[in-house]
Length: 529
Image (cartoon, rainbow, N blue to C red; front, side, top):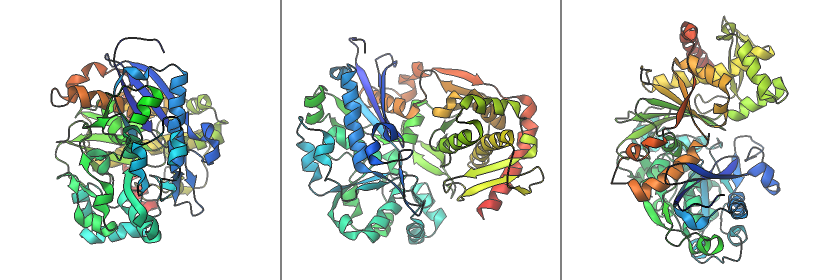
């Protein structure tokens, strides 16, 4: 890393498959990136795609110590590459939403008194009452979801309070399951962190608070008052408010860097820590989403984000507090079957070659001759369904497609679903609309062309990186100490709008996809009933 005099702002991202870091300078340029890939770099934890799937295939967890070990390794690699920690003015971060960590009593005292001569993993290995953290892919809490909804008067009533109906992966329901199945562990738990506030705690050297935006994804927070909703807390577990701690703004300065990180790696003692948030809110910050934009992140899970000023929550999709304007909101649709499904079908049909995958997409006709496919390898969130479904032009179920049909059916089906559910939230394309694509698959122009055609809108990508969540946390690090209360987020980051046009829609496909959207909606209702 070339030495310069400018300040640095650090963003961390603890995602499903890796831990990443991005540093930006005063000009908002990315000057450093590094990552730790869990399966590859930490094989001793025996994860597959970053997670551990249990025998019932509903329960999905991650060893909490893996995340600590990954942080150790990331910092070590940064040091080996000459990263100048002493230039970091502030840092923030993000984590996969809905995952949770359960700290043992007295753990905060240890966090505050860590030995800089020893690794974090060696010192924190016995700090968790639950060794395996439930994450967003877990769908084993249906019983707890029903109980929570009943406690407030039904699914819509819960959505009216928390922004979402009860979802199996949401933290409140995961906590309820742990309390019911392992009450001794729950009693010994001093603090429950989200993945984001857990990573923040490692940086802060104490229990970090949960921010409004990530807290919105728990089925526990009132998104309008921005406080814990007591009826929801009581329905999940006793003494839960004390175990969760306070809620804060996503751009709040929460303290200084820990003594441990300062002494071990050379962070300045003055380095500020800004509240960490969830990966989806951080992505909204990373793409500098505007009111007329639609953001689609194509990652392990695919997500779709919209800006809302006056939300009307429904039982499909989610409403979170907006991380860059806490008086506003963001709508989120999450589709569990994202890149892992694309990779699985690429491996099966194209011998693991993305080039062959792209060629197949280009060689097959838009609309796929009427064939429609739905690929829910994991139990999907919206709709709540699992399995693979193929239909011909007459909506007759099929067992197989040809190679080209399979690949196009996969990509078209994923984007047809996104348009169907975006429109259900009130989304309408206008002449000003941009689709902002991010995530790993946003590198693939053949995939983006299908996205553009189905939504009838141009697709833009961020120049320089696909890690919008990590970049967004770096922006929040800067905004939290330099911009908040002085200027608006977009005013501060106007020069970061480094989008480049990726593809334009093919006007000849408009009628084809308008008809397919209607068919897809009916077929999806059929498979999810």
